[in-house]
Amino acid sequence: MKSKSHIYMLLMGLFFSVSSCDYLAVSDQMSGGLQNTDQIFENVAYTKRWYANVFAGIPDYSGINSLNVGAFKNPWAAICDELVVGYGNAAKANNSDKNAATAGFHRYGDCYKYIRQANIFLEKAHVITTSGTQGDRLEEDELNEMRANVRFMRAFYNYLLLEQYGPIILVKDKVYEATETQDVPRNTVDEVITYIDQELREVANELPQEPMHENESYRAWPTKGVALAVRAKLWLYAASPLLNGGYREALSLTNPDGTRLFPDRDDNKWNTALNACKDFIDYAETGNRYELYKEYTTSSTGEQILDVDASVYNLFQKYNKEIIWGTANNDWGGLDGDAFDRRIVPRCEKNGLGSTGVTQELVDAFYMNDGLPIKETDYLPKSTLYKEDGYGTYKDKNDGKYSKNYTNVTVSNRYLNREARFYNTVFFNGRQWPVTCKQVQFYNGGNAGVQEGQATTIG
Image (cartoon, rainbow, N blue to C red; front, side, top):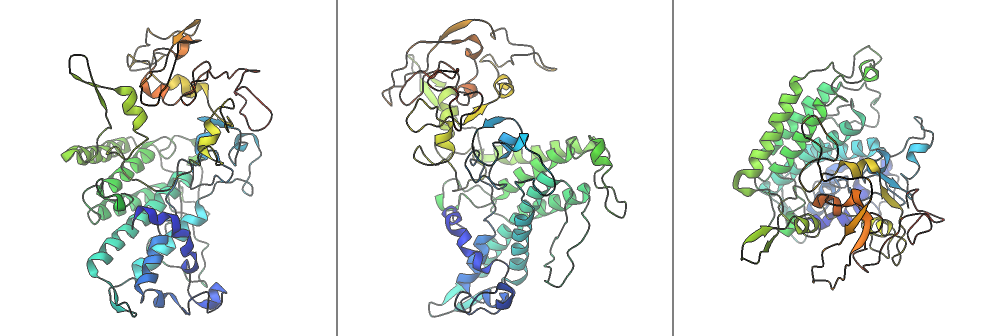
């Protein structure tokens, strides 16, 4: 599957859950004369279309603040109070009534559709020696690659369900018929984790064993590294209080037969999580399969010095070996669009809407440039560089590449001497916008303050 195939995957919906033309309720012409799913898997082109649609549920986490943000995008940053958004589906999620009928951002139905799609492929896809006038073939080696990818995606969709819902129904290999009852009880959290873990461990040996950094056409393929990374995150969830006995309300949740769905606390799960993370790290470091992206500058003495600012900034500007699993999907939108880019640009800039802001909690989470936090923690002392009172002088770097003309500006001391990630994430009052070098004023009455329309309450 090529990374660009995601663009047209949804066009394959015609064959999504077909069992007969009556079931689809479409004409013979629309269905291509297909009478059942068996006929799909007698044709190479149709088989590959079915296969491609299994990947249609890969999340696009750049979709934060556009109008149609759904559960396969990223409403979570706003819902979890990491960001404040003034536009889109997630804008009022935290101050509106919720119940079983109105709660949005569900993955449930779609994930089970993709799991069904995967199960039908695994059950019915087979080697095709000759097909049609072009003599298309589906050889065993290619089929095995496809089957491994589909098996991984099935495990991944179960993982996405666990991530959002905790205890879910494990379909496993079963393909339900239309006449079968689907009113079945949920599996316990431990049963779900055990199943996903086993699937990921087994399929990791069937997937490509090396990352595909150098092959642009295959960067979206799942690989062994991807499976190990998902498994590591799976066990971090499994060990966390949310799924590991940390909440009384969860411990009281049962199926109708009295089966408890959430387990008692088990600290041994942290050891499993540690080992799962180590498995991925060991794999990543062997042969530098994955590595942190770094850029260097040359000092006046000719020495190569790590440029932390450029490393963090350009990490998101180009493909690099820090990326574990790439996707061609994005919701950036550009300044003429109606998505991320335009909605993070302040209103003092052309086409900027300024409808996305960070919370003070997120700002405070960043460290100072001495590697210490602004407040003392259980394991690190407070940085002596941090000051909340008063003002100081700040200037962004003029790199010369884009004819920037930054000047000294006066800003709050709390924004000075912060780490590189802070300056690449947080845009604060008084800083100069990198395109025009115009000083941005987020206060009420300023050039980017609260206006009528979609601005956040913080400008």
